[in-house]
Length: 255
Image (tube, rainbow, N blue to C red):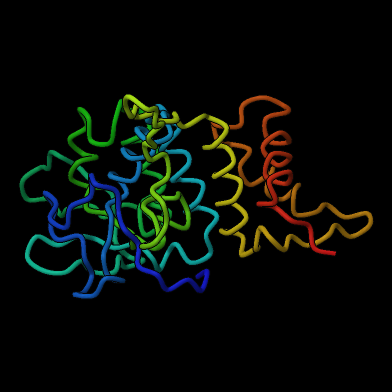
């Protein structure tokens, strides 16, 4: 947690009611959830990413978060969402032989590990979450996280009194006001991924530990953690993202 108690205002695309049930785990503002399928779709639109890259971003942040296993919820069609149990299996067979017990899969099919496994196979190979993948729609689409976690890991939504990121601003002339929208750059997605990786490791970006002599530092650890992220293809991409963040004061090395 970052200690900020201001409520999260979700994007306009968010709705409390979803095809899989209410996106809430209780009746409080803090109990509001967002399905991971919606987070992927939002990243595709807001960050101008293909589905695979958006899925990898969500996958990486969850895989690196030490508390992600306890932060996943399953929507319910007849009540509030429930915390996903570690024993919950994502193994799915659309066709069963009559008289046979339904298989539950192995340990790799259950809990957070199972969710990440099937996220890559069901969503990562599609043009969008659930697009043409019947299994993905039934197995993964009810999976959700709190709005506060989605905001912290992926920048989903905003704090109540913050300016909407990427909002249209008016350039006023004596005759007219022309709305100008600034497009989201790929570099912004890379910067956000680096910050998300730091936070997932429990490191404050504004107080990054200084390297100890002869040891790999935090920068190296973050580089390794997001090495499989498709946003960082190329030998200098990560270094440039780290440099941008340092220059803007969003990453500060503590003395």
